[in-house]
Image (cartoon, rainbow, N blue to C red; front, side, top):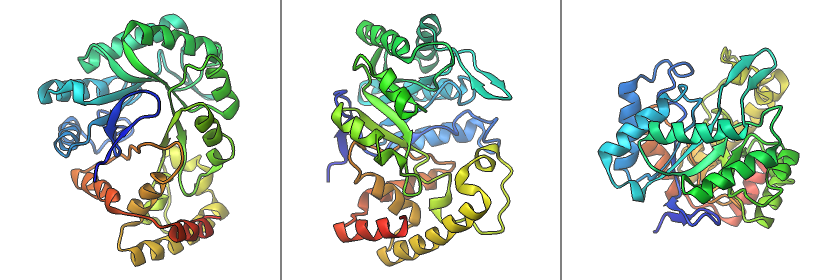
Length: 313
């Protein structure tokens, strides 16, 4: 079976299961993943035929890009790879959250800096990682369109946008690829984002495809989380967390009957969704990548999709 797909209207062709490299070079968030393991993960992905690698400046403040640049230079075959990265120029972490700079000058510098770190002369998909509080989103999109015209980037992406911000960013129809939260447990995108993407030929790449690990089925009611990402996540708050674990218990029984891991079912489900052309699960160990790849052997029937809708109603 051919597992290559064309990503929306970009003309880019990639293996439909990519590598979300959020752990690579990102020791601040993943202290157990050192540079040696980061290099091993990238190399493992490339050796397994995974040719889509997604990173960002914020992953180690450029260090993820540096490690990926080293790896793809050593591996060769750049023309067969699809590399995406995201701008977060001049990030400032304040009490109100993350502040970035999406001014035209900052975005141009972000692209040039990413090209240098990635050791390449073009970036396949360049994402606006977060909106800022000053730059109109349509202006940021226009700047990326200029960079696309220059050949420095091949496709324009955006991430972490509300539906209203999505519409503003795409005011001049520049957006090619959107990254948004979407999983069996977080399905708000189905109400407005996915119909909009279908209407405007925008490819959707889900992030948090396993709902921050919930859909892997390994958490228990008495687990205590100390990381900010879960402590502030509505899915992990008291009654919601208990209710989600009950859903996941039913989901685990479904997966067992199907002869697959819960995470594989969750990822396979995403590949059945309209506007979703590929997925980019992460991995902290090479064998997790092998497990992710088994997703491509999971076929879900219409009846099984209905059963999943009942579990995650």
